Length: 334
Image 1: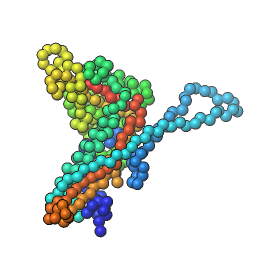
Image 2: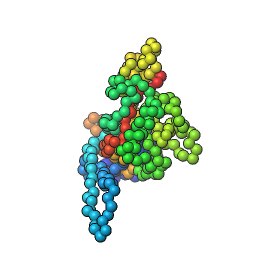
Image 3: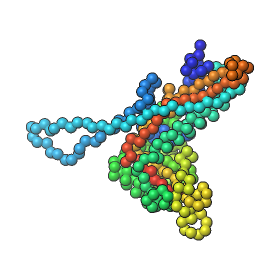
Image 4: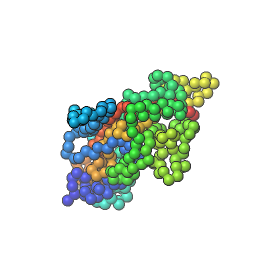
């Protein structure tokens, strides 16, 4: 008899469906790769805690002969985040057999996997872009921005990260359905919208990902500049008409992307150091639950014409250290 946790499919078939969900959703999981992952076991609290131990005082202090120094106490900072349940379902009209190879199930899995990945990434992005550590391309507020990204702005951001001892990212979540990490070349990572691709490629010193040679680029990576690797995703959208005039040169023609043609759209770029934010991974065993209910007679469906495929997941995200992640706000040239 099938486990009711997964509807009318067996746990084994649910495992197949889960792998397909994760595999098809992989291209959308950009934030997933670079955060501090904290898988949450089932039947646990809805509140998860990310813990950071603070550095010890490093003021030079010579030892006195035969005198044991005063012992230090480790101090920690706990950041709590509340898990929320996300999910959705689609109606299927044909009888679906208990196998992951059924075409109807495969269609449902494909649609739901993209939705699940995008929904969770949007939730994470909304959390991260609300950080307080912000640099404007020009001016001192979002509604004054009408300047594209420059190498000078990137250098200011990198300098601020290094001053706060933000570490380079050296490990990322593997590009497979299973949760796990792999070592990568040290660098800061910047994630942003594809509309900024032209401006990024125009930065002096930019190196395209296709010219990396032996270094493997991340999925959707454009390239790098002075130790920053740029990765794009359409999920990281702009504040429409959020900036100043889209015609900063007053030539009568907009030189910046604008939704209405009046004010410049403002794009966030998140410059990320290691352990700057935490997530509950969407990949790995038990991270997402696929379910399937075959059509069966009922008062609402006496001819058994409708079934459902669905997913659900417990998720959250949290900024762990605002000083190790910078949000740049820039415009994009037409």
